[in-house]
Each structure stands twice: as C-alpha cells, then as structure tokens.
Length: 228
Image (cartoon, rainbow, N blue to C red; front, side, top):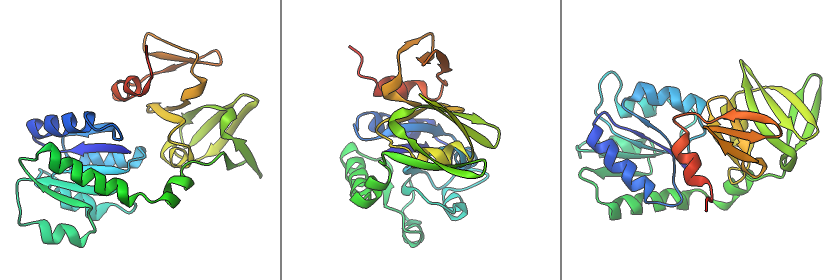
C-alpha cells in the first residue's frame, strides 16, 4: 500500500517512518512536514493511506481531510484525545495517541489492509487498459507497456510497438495500472519494473531510453528491487 506521513514534528515523522519501513506491505511515497505540502502530494500521487497529525500550522490535519474529494484511508496520529469523536465522523480508519508503539501501529495498518477488499484489488490489477487517443479508443496490453511519461496535461504511454498520447494526469494513469508491475520512479515517469534492463547513476535503462530516478522515489525504488 502506498502511504505518506504528515506531521510537523520531526521526531514523530522519524518514528512513524521507522515503523513503515519495518512493515513489508507498506510503501512510503512521501514524508510531509505540513498539511499544505501533503495536499499537493495527494493531487499528484496515488496514495492508499495517510498517517496524519491533527495540530499543524496553517492547515490542520482535520482541515486537510475535509478538503479532500477522493479520500485515501486516514490514520490520525496525535497527542490529543479530544478530537477522536470528530475524527470518526469523517470515517477515518483509526486514531492513535502519541507516543505510539509498533504493536498499536501494526494493528491500525492491518485494519487498513482488511478494508481493501478483493474487488478493489482485482480492479487495480487489470491485464489491459483502454485509452482515448485522438478520435478512437485503443486497447493497451499492460505486458507491452514499457513506461509512462508526463507531458504537461498529457501522458505518453510508451509500448513495445509504439506510443499513445493521452489526456490524463500521472495520478490518473497510476490508479489504472497493476501496482505489482508498475512503479513511480520520478515525478514524470512510471516504469514497468519487469522491463528494466539496467540501472546506473540514478538512471533506469528501458528500450534504449534512460529514465531518471527522482530523489524522493529513490529509497522506495531500491527497496522494491530484488538485488543480490
């Protein structure tokens, strides 16, 4: 599951990051020092879960939740107990009070995993997607999809047989891809992990194309690889 951490306290961010790294089924996409940064990340990234503090400057965690139209699952992590009733009015998954133990953290994320039912998982793992390009709808076999590249308000789907330019966002395309096969490695690139030929100097080689690895994606990418 893709997750982000949102907390203005560095110590809290460090502790939760450590917990996430200990949990095999969690993939840390970003760590945000405030809710405004998190709001921008959520517009760009496919995020399943947010670990969210409540009391932050400029925008509180509660205000962030209220502003979201498409809500990922939320686990509040806060030093206050008096927001719990209001928090659950917004259907948050869990509410943890600092200091948080790993046992309590794990119980909360297991609840998140239980909420992701089989129907949702199957929808996220298709063999083909259909994209509208020019005046027609084209089927793209995901096995043939090499990588996706952002281009202003469009994305380019690079396949082994050609490319398709689609009016979409990277976040929109990412939601349609098989999360097990594809990975965001840069703000402007999603790659088919099975098509990677080599990696050198923070660049991925796929079909004679060098694709950069973004600094904020580097740790998750190398963690994902099965390196001997």
